Amino acid sequence: MDLSQIHRFRLDWITSFVAVARHGGFSAAAAALYRSQPRISIHVAELERVLGVRLFDRSVHPIVLTPEGRALLPHAEAVLLHVQQLCGGTPDGSARGEVRLAIYPSAAAFLLPDLLVQLGRLHPQVKLGLREGPTVLLDELVLGGAADLAVRPVLPPVEGGKLDHSVLWHEPLVAVVRARDPLARQARVELTELAGLRLITIGEGEEEASSQFETNLAFDQAGLSPQVVFRSNQPQTLVALVRRGLGIGVTNALAMTTSNLEGVGLVPIADAHYQRDVALWWRSDQPPSPAVDAVRELIRALPRPRSPAQTIAPSSSSGGPPFIRRTRVRNPAMKATTPSAVNQLGT
Image (cartoon, rainbow, N blue to C red; front, side, top):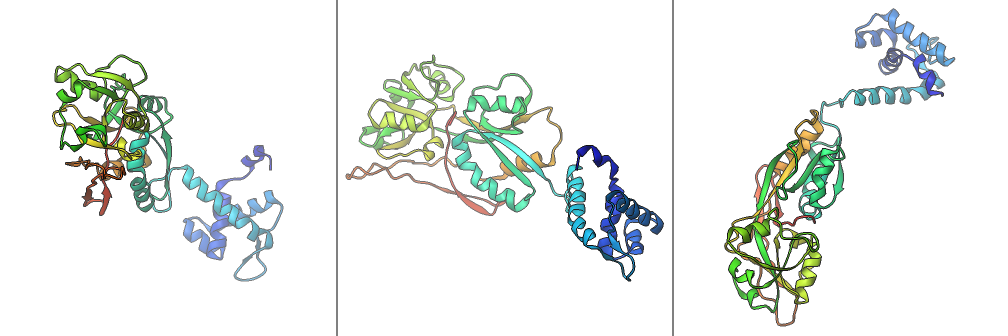
């Protein structure tokens, strides 16, 4: 049918037709819709006139659908359902819609499995659309309307004042060292020890050291000038460089849980006062949305990464991967346990 002809059909005609079919008669349909029986009869008659077919066999009692009526009924019911959804409601009044979440890969690996399970259980009508990318681009997705929510660190700072945020968790800095390095046998390492070594940190290529990143803030506060030989936003790149002996990595621990750590280990940094704060972000002028609110509250309620007291034990003499201890966290609200992890900027 030409879409220009849709105006010929009134929604109350379709509503009355479906009610008569469901309730088995015009009187019962009128009672269900709180309308007069003549009004229901007029609606059905008008629909039959426009379609050019009989929808009910009125020669029998109770009336029954004609073959044409039986064919039309599922489509008419679908029209009413779609109109109901178009108006923002579901039969049980629950949240519905697609919520677009911008997130960097390390945080996605940690959060998404539990988030999707809880979303399917508590809000089955809400779908999640993933926008995965580097940290420095996530706020732009939210500001530009391409995402409804974002999970990103507080640093680098978000430009402008149009985003609100809620801090989700705090992460410590860790040193990434070769398994054969003497540092691998230490329970902790201090910034003063690291400052004199060749370091590989988070950042972009050959950029100058920036006070916008947690690693640089930690050294700056300690009055230290580290020797940074390379920067990368990819945790596996950082690990590969450390594995080849090109430097000591300094990063956030959650990123390392998504990497192949064979031949390297993680050592907590004892005196790094700056840590990564990871937050959930949204536009302050965002229109109200039950679906967005549902996802936001679920993310806030999910278990958080825990900082392991000791994340490395020396690798075995066979040269295998170091043993990484993981803790388990119980969140009473979610009634589930989740392995802890810790994460990395832009990955």
